[in-house]
Image (cartoon, rainbow over all chains, first blue to last red; front, side, top):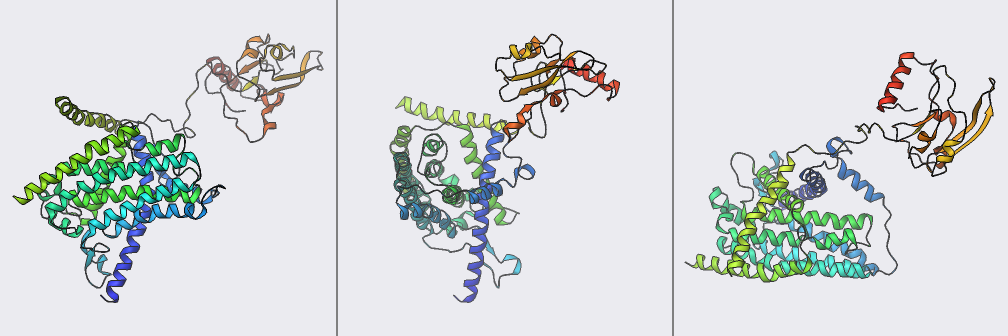
Length: 332
Length: 168
């Protein structure tokens, strides 16, 4: 692995980071606009044509805001928590296959894979890193030094941990079917035709995955921690300006990460006829984001005890069932 | 067990129905009014800013009788009478405090000369409290002889129908 590999990887990393951060910013725009139209009103339309510069305006506003740090916080943890929340959300994108082999319109010396790092255990990596994101919330809630933040943080992290069990189990079916942990392998297996997509072989797995993913990312209808933030308090109450925006960006990055994983595992990743693979990938992730926002617009929230009930008593047994049935099918 | 299964099936049938309703709204025209760029015309009897009317020959109608100040529930009108060259009584000082005013229209109802009335304009926000004390000059409608007589006629018709009151 010489200098060529190093340079191509660095270029890929830069591209992915740039696109990802822009995508997170415009995910907020997409959400507000789409939520608006789904609710029979318009979203932002003032900053730039059709409100397209709204994320820029929001970013500038947040940068200029005063960074208030209350007196009775644990300084070190308080500063650490947004970072612990943000970094895993971004790190997941290191192993997602965005496209098939490409060479950036001839700029690269030779064709390179469409993924930053083709780990053989990529799927395990993804779930391990995603679990680290929970720490950010726990630390934030605890270090804020306020009762409501602590309660909000504890609730949120309990919810995330509960649904992580179902989350992890729901993809075991895919692993059994694909016989590999490597994400590029999984996509290549689905790339031949639409009938090979794992959604048709693991419908229950997909359903469980998507429900657990929505609960993991604290989105509606499982967003009681977030709603409490709006009403009373939550783990990010005491945060202002850039620290708050890191939590915010990490939430949208998590949403994008979960959508990207779902697309990779169940919907064939970048595969699709005619159009270049990257377009297919982006289109599929966009569809997932659309569904995320659509669900938010449609359903009321779960109450916290209903949420925990559902996670442990319904989704976990179903995930086990799914695993057992898939294993039986694979053996025979 | 039966009820549980039925509940599950019902959920799977009803959830997409709900989502279809929200989806339909995507394609309906939004009901939002693009406010600063487009404004809704107010109802004919909408009570906004104050005006002091004139007679057709240009003289002010207000005789500073004080009935509007007496009728005002918010005590926002202040006036000082005086005598003009013709010997008629008129208001030397006439001030309305638009922040105290509750825009009820009692002054309009109380005035015996039909001198004060409330028009449609409502966008007089400011960042300075003093700018909300309007004097007689701020409220007096322009001298009709200076204006196009047709304009005066239109103004009277507009006032009668209560539409499109112009900014001072």
